[in-house]
Length: 369
Image (cartoon, rainbow, N blue to C red; front, side, top):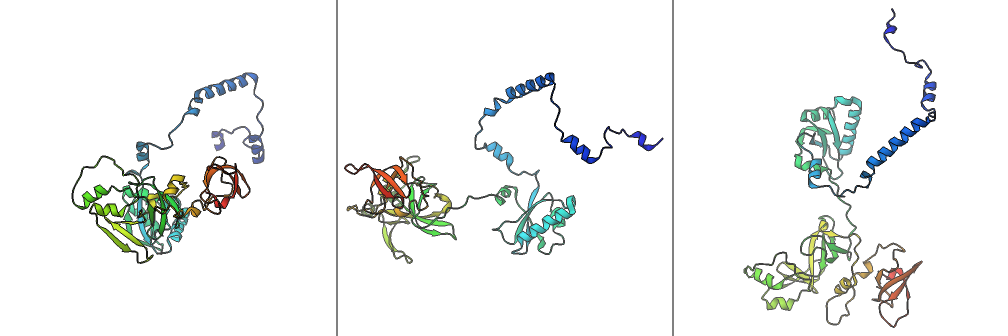
């Protein structure tokens, strides 16, 4: 008996490949009436079963337990930091990738990571250090003697992504994100991109009596979560409370500041140097009241509005909408407040807040914020 007798030959197995392909793509025959009813019944059943779930709303943010479940554990592959030739981090990662393609499962590593900001090192994901050593063997750009295990708690930091920093410049309006001044409007006066820090000026929130007590060593119980109201610094009032006021000159700008308790003040404003992470510069829209407060303090009230020309320097054409509250910052109508009625090409038609003026005034959009 032939050996082929032990095999079952399916009908049509001897058809040419092109016939098989043609049959696979052939349009199915119409269903019989009873089969059509079964399909429709099944469809109704599925819709009824999942109708409720389709309207289920989920929280945008996962819970702490769910977040914890996503973190690496001792059962997951480990992350190893391996030294390589400086400036050749990406090249080394590509070489390891090619080696994985060539050797397949023989190379027991899971992934390779080369970070732009990390020089002289790459990360390799693998279960054992021996797997890493085997993978880097023969690569001239790798130094197998310098292999370090990344602690589990630090693994997520390797691939953490920071949002793109805002393009900060002098006179940019920002808001504070943390601390006593959280939510307060501030204005950038200096940017240090190297140290990722900015100096801002803002209206102080300082309890002078509490500061005097602190400087004199007297401890007074503070009210829980007490935040002083915003108030310009009054140097004379500080001196009356026997708070030492030192006048200092900035060696770079030549400006004079009052140093009070280690804090710098000028024209009543507090000048504070903070991390870029502690401020928000996205879509900042100061109110009229806030802008009025940023006039240079003084009895004459003639101080220029600070930085209004840069308030919305990046405002796109036709960004104004009907009903928007606006203020004119340049020209004969400077400081005019009102509401947008319509926008035509480069002109914004404003309904003025002040009585006795025409119903609407056309102002070039570059003069309005």
